[in-house]
Image (tube, rainbow, N blue to C red; front, side):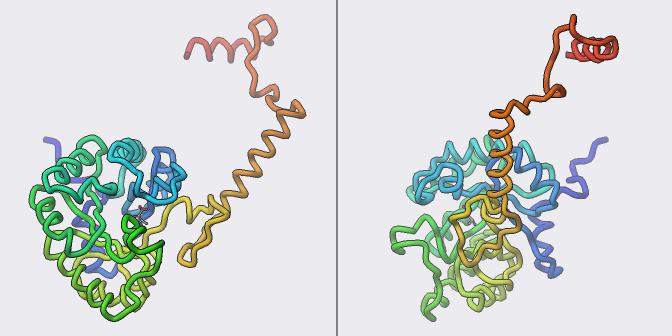
Length: 293
Ligand code: KIV
């Protein structure tokens, strides 16, 4: 008889929640395609967010507002094909969940059915608590997102740190508690002072995942392209670039351009030859190649 239990290394939402109880830090990155997903999986990341940040890093938009549900389904499905172990969370894009409960539930369901997401993420505090409740109740796990909510960029007048004033801090704590009570299984806290993120983390029993919110959160999330240093012009205070991939990639491309121009590429080992020109040994390899393919 086959077992339906998840294999040992496969992360599940309850397993991730247990990490908070055990005091084990949780790791999360964004991802947008299958090739990077395989690398993220191999690195042992716990949570993979298919963020609507794809509007900025993949599509070159100024903010996340233009991202559509179809964009999210396409990228979530691609990422899911490259992953075996992490929990996959798909962002619900702007206006896919704010207008009507029924539409929001259907859209979230589509991200799970067609995108293979295990959870959705929605931005907002108390104002989305009822929606989070309705979703959780029918088996759609919800990650909340408070603090700097990028979908409210125009209301804020830019991407700015939230929760500096005492009144804002109190509201954020109330928001976090309301989302926990509504059934959210975890919370992203973005762009708030470390001291405020610490208080929120202590006020709830669900894991908090911080970005630009200090070390006291239960876990950390970064945009994959930021931590890999793919955009030399993007240097926010909260990002640590673990590698300068922009330079690595540009240097590799320059070498390619140079070698094509100087006829060093393709070299002999990158070429196919007609049968008449090959040596007996190469013929063996050739036959093997063509019998195989
Ligand atoms: O869309 C995104 O990448 C996010 C992270 C910044 C948390 O929401």
